[in-house]
Length: 204
Image: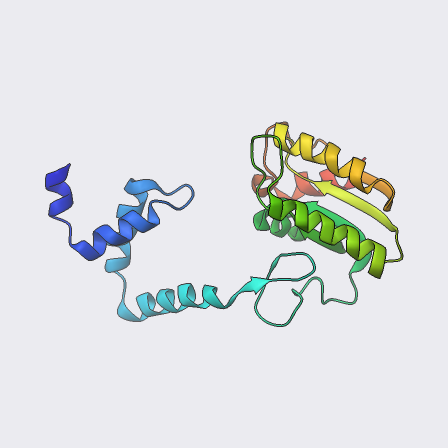
């Protein structure tokens, strides 16, 4: 292994070391990616570099904590046609995107962040829930129509769902959870649009 490492130029090894830490990549795929990129046309590679650099300019929406390019609010929160009184609490950005692709949800979101597996929330996640409480109390009349708990049907998701129901029961007319169209242990991110649409329709 040491012989193999020394024959790779330092720039490539640095790329492999950095990209192998990304989810679902690992050293083998990072190596393949490095050599694929090296073989690209210079203009294509320049466009990729520019796209990566542009990510630095993204920030969090002050309301739902999704990503935005500019201003205080993301495109969803800034849309006056969305229903502010229905809020779906999701775990990851990819979960939010998956729900949006169904075209069946026209409310707002709260992006909670990836749940830890140890049965308790991170301090940043607790702050986001407190932010939502404050928003309901101060900006939305003290009570909204519905909170949809759109968390993965896992142990951590079930635990967090129970906690949210307890803390928000006085702040929403009803609190629902996605129907079990998604199998236990499954992930919203990987569910197809039809399955997610059914889960939204069957929430209870």
